Image (cartoon, rainbow, N blue to C red):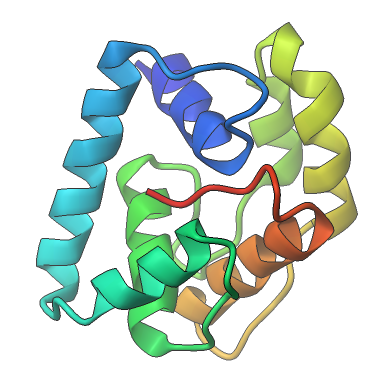
Length: 137
């Protein structure tokens, strides 16, 4: 299950690496719905859409906490919003490692003002490094 969850997050971040299976798509939809519900404000959908359309990466608290929620649900971030990059890379399937690992290592962990902001800053780095392959559920 951990490999499936991690493969899903990598497909979300780097979807051109590998097409998502039906099982991964269903998991992504469930993660999205659960996190939108946990955030409790439907306005987050507009920010998610902005990112999905590659129109920017809004500096909005709702988006920051949504991204952290997705990472929390996948158990790849600690309470402070810090992603263990090397542990994450170690779980990468071979076919993803060549493309994803350099971006993840380059970005590392970018500390923010809160746990949500730390996850957001790290994801913003992924987006800024190569927004054409970045995707958010």
